[in-house]
Image (cartoon, rainbow, N blue to C red; front, side):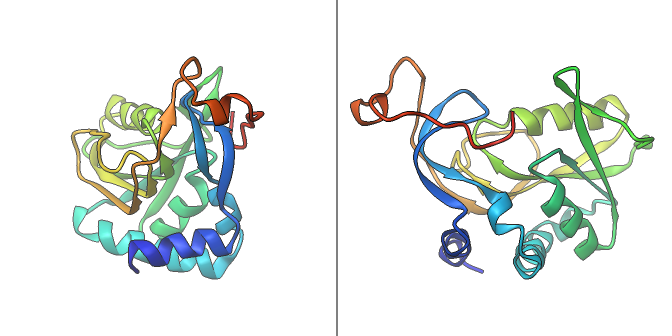
Length: 188
């Protein structure tokens, strides 16, 4: 699939929103990718998962880890497509941790899968978990890279969409956003 075809999937599903949004990073934006709207349809999950798995296959991961909530659906599908184990990190006391008996073996090659990255805070937290448990980060696979490749985690990164989406600090909003009520549609 081309980037335009993937964008069309998001448009067709109503997952590419326009307005005034507060992102998890605290930045404000006119666009928001609500991936859950696209990923509620299993044929879409399978199609996007196959595309992402195809890009990440050569990284040699034996386990996929995703930060909850956004990465859960696509992470599990990428793992299914690659025929590997799937685990996830979830919040506890405001930070991501491994729970539910999930373990990472020393030297285990792990691919981090996420839905959307702007500044990459959740991905970085997940990378830290993998490394703290002795795992080796094989790479990162994401549906939407809102940084257009400017976020650098020091490992291979694959995405289906790479866009430079305009973002603004809360104290430096353009006039049209300053007069428009902001909503925070993502996870908290």
